Length: 295
Image 1: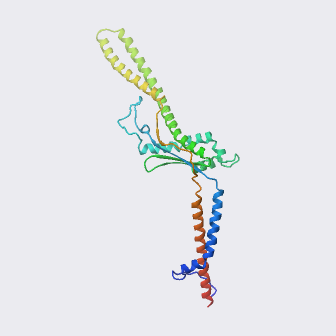
Image 2: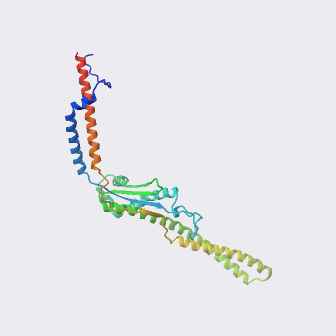
Image 3: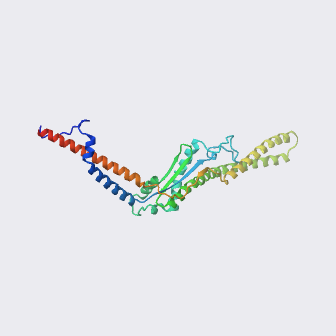
């Protein structure tokens, strides 16, 4: 049918150089307009500042130790990959997030209205967007915080790092306290047993006394072992260990991290020019085929 419009393009159907020359003025106007508009929009965006903390997990996270802190033969200063994953999990935990929410009143800071339908979900999305904790290619952990307030971004990044130490020590002391209660009961039972043998020994003589004395020595040795364990558990329930080794603490950012206005302008301008070229190319192709159908 002659009235049917078809857009068929061949590599030799349009001379690209002549095409751009013919529409040079349109490209210039569109490019300038896109650059101006994107620049104005980028100026309206509120800047975000970024602060970063670099830290390693210490070997205390993975080293097996006795109750008095006698570690295994491992002597590495830094923890392994398993320790790194544990550190990331702790830093990304709800305990750290809840601490930041309360300390910095993030619901108000992120302008979440009290009447918001899902305030906790919105707050979680905001924190996912601005707070990041990742493993680097060097095996370290990187904490990145972005915020409109450069001082708050720095403070939150450092708090996330220090809070990890607090949580690890809290977990350790909690576990040690439970262990201390169990060992304390066992120690008291063993102490009463030794006292009973000692009382019995004072009333016996001869071979019976020798047998009881031998048993008393064994039980007394075990009592000494239990006492050592008790003292170790007591020490662990009170001690504070370093679980993170901070390489670089966060500092207040001097320059904004977002938006990068030059990138926004370049990408926006290029996108507009590409779209214009596509529209003009299609329009010329349709015009050519209309002319062919009329002949």
